Every structure is written in C-alpha cells, then in structure tokens.
Image 1 (cartoon, rainbow, N blue to C red):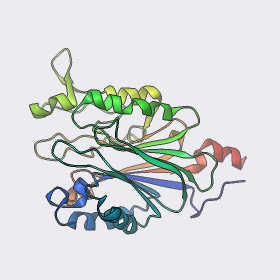
Image 2: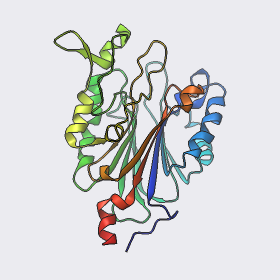
Image 3: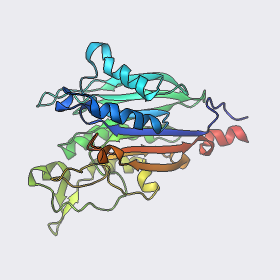
Image 4: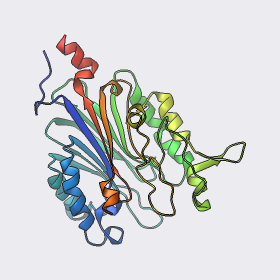
Length: 292
C-alpha cells in the first residue's frame, strides 16, 4: 500500500527566501511594503515548507510578525529561531513554516556555534514513518573558517537513510558549480569570500562547501544543472549563488524541479531571489517499498 498523501499529491515543494530585514524599510524599523508585496508571491509558490532569513524584529509582541507571516503564507505552523546580536545591533532571526501535511516532532535553535542562528526542526510528512530533518541556514557572512565550523555538525545528517534538508542563505555558492568571476569584488570583502590561487587568481573559499560535499550532501541546483545567481545583485557586489537547497543522499533521488525566482529582485523586495525545489515522494526508498 502507499502511504496517505493528505492533499492528494506525491510532490513536496520547499522554498527558501532571504526577506532583507524582514521585508521592511529602514533595516526592519520602517514600513512593510516589501513584505506585503512579497508574501502573496511566496504564497503563490504553493510550498509545503518555507525557510525565511533576516526576520528582524519578528520576535516582538509575542512573535506577532511571525504569526502574521504564517497567516499570509497559509501555513499551519511557524517557528522563529532568534539570532545573536551583531556588532551593528541587528538580530537576523530565521523562520520556518509548515503546512498541514507535516507533523512536527521537535524544533529548536542553536546560537552557541553560529554567527547568527541555526533553526532546526524534525517533522513527519503525511504520516510516513521516517522523519525529515530540516536546518534553516544563515551562515557567517564574514569568516570562511567559521562557516566551515558552523556546518561541521551537519555532516551527520547525511548518514545513510536520513531524510535531511539544508536550505537557506549559505553565504557560499554551493557544491559543484562553475567558479565565480571575483575580479571586481571590493577588497574589503576578499577575506570573507575568496582566496588567491598559485597564479594570483581569486577563487571561491570552499571550506564549508567541502565539508558538506564530503559528507555526501547533494546541491539541488547542481543536480538540475542550474547555475543562476540568487544574490549579490548590488552594483558593488558580484552576482553569485548564495541561497541553497542541499539534500542528504537518501532524499536526493526525489528531486524533480528547481527554480530561481527573480521577482523579489526585479521588484525590489529583497537583494535575494527566492528558490524553490520540488521532490516526488514516489521516488523515495520507503515509498517504493510500500508500493511493492
């Protein structure tokens, strides 16, 4: 027999999006025009799970902005991971939202190891026996060494049989993509992004990506042969991949679609595009076994 699918679909859609100061002007303190415009667009992607970053001030008044976002996205459950305070006074919280297909087993946040925060959740999809592990990434934007340290504990999530999803703003281009042309990168950002090879050419600092690739994680964009940039669109910056969806080896065979949505960039709602990935549960080992 097949496991039940609550909405009649074997497909699961995941979306990650950096809101840019929670979709508000004045670094999160101003009007929310950007969020009000972005929310209907994000809802139109019909995701089963959303991972958002830079949810500044969403903890206020009993997480009122989190609950407003949950309602605007049509989700059943929302969870805010509160971030450390930066040297400029920001707290770049992250949020995850799940629809009715998910039974939340556990959730939490880790600030001790992370420059910002790592939000995590364990959830069962459509009453299946094997839970999925989610990690909402917003890795260190300044230190390649610390990014590698931040992802080291995530390697265990790629163990055989584990259904794990790492998604969010990785502040790195991911796994298996063509080298970025960093020649125009301002010097004050070199330490955060690049190293010089033996010929003096700037190359992407890949230590964190190497940890994840070595563990077995699969970059969905690479698997789908899509190398489009998702961030770095400011005039002084370098367009690059930055917003990631990585799957454990057990989940990777289920990927059937990947899209970079540039509406947030074109409309000025954020400096990041939204990224969606679609998985077909019929391609998961437990579904093939149940159907046999």
